[in-house]
Amino acid sequence: MSSRDIISLLNPWWREGGVRKDLAKPYRRRAFNEIVGALEYGQIQIITGLRRVGKSTLLYQTVEHLISSGVDPLNIFYYSFDIALGNPLEILKSYSNLTGVDWRNERVYVFFDEIQKAREWSSWLKLIYDSHPNIKLVVSGSSSLHLEENAHRNLAGRFILHKVEPLSLIEFFELKTGRRVENPELWRDDLLITLKDYIRKPFPEIVNWSELRAAEYIRESVLEKVVSSDLSPHGLDPSRTLELLTIFYSEPGSYLNVNSLAGELNMSKKTLYKYLEYMKSSYLVRFLRNYRPSVRASSRKMRRVYPYHWSLTFGLMGDVERGHLVESMVASILDASYYWRKGNREVDFILTNGRIVPVEVKAKDRIRKEDLGNLLYFLRKFGLDTGFLIYEGEDGSMEVGGKHVRASSLLSLCIYGALMLD
Image (cartoon, rainbow, N blue to C red; front, side):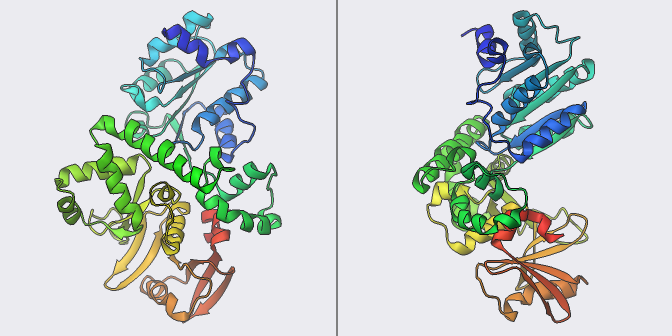
């Protein structure tokens, strides 16, 4: 198929005057408002995240928004590098030849999907951005390694990053029921009923699927697609990658011993580090470092490994032990980067966004004083007044040993995320 034919097929609104509903689906995620709101700024918008979270749908919905706002459909150009590779400048020239739109001088909106697959993409975008301020660039991609690192290196000050996660509980409920949730407290009982279903199916396409089909989807359309399409071109053997994922997903929160693991897999440490870095950068796993106030960027030693998003474990493991699941959910929702351990004392997660916030996790609905021992020790050691507990009971608070512990349910965490820690 010629480049001209590909471009024509990818931009049906040039002929039809609008975007088909199967492309710009009716439900609008919260990220949609962020993207549309940022259109007024000049920077390049970069949309990144795990596969199948709906990045392409967000692009199509933004196209639809522009057309409904009065933008000429011919002045909106979409291209997917997942369909065919090419030089962005040559692709733009083909766009002009096909439509007669002078992209060099007219106000045009350019959407590049799976941009990380274009060779030296960030350098091309920098050239286009700097030389043609009339162009509004919105790009997306699935691998953060190629997007975020290259963007920070070559596009400093020129981009706004939108990181799209799998569905939140509220988004899942809205998409499943067709109801809009403005005040979550009014819907708390309904959200609690929905929680079990949500945990296994937080991707837009599968909210109404059975658990078995949903697990197959996560394995085939998310995990195996990332492994085969995003990682294998970089020399990572798919079977090895899946083997590592199985090890990490079978026991979330385990400590990473590179020497032992490399020996077990008969792999050099250098090669193993390569696998680990690419798996992290493709949103398959997350690594937590042991918190130290004086040295935030601690060494590679004593790292803990979690699935990037808890739902990925269902694609490989089937059922997941409840304690591991709850801990993985907290790590995902809080986007955790640190834990704390010293000797035989440990706190599950430490958040450091402007202040130190210790978070302990218990997969139980009743808490005894001894369950809070490590959290209280951490509060005393670092001179803090308040710690947080995530568990499966009711929201509340308690004073223990002169320290304040705020207890929040797993449901509240899923509804409010990190906001509940404010």
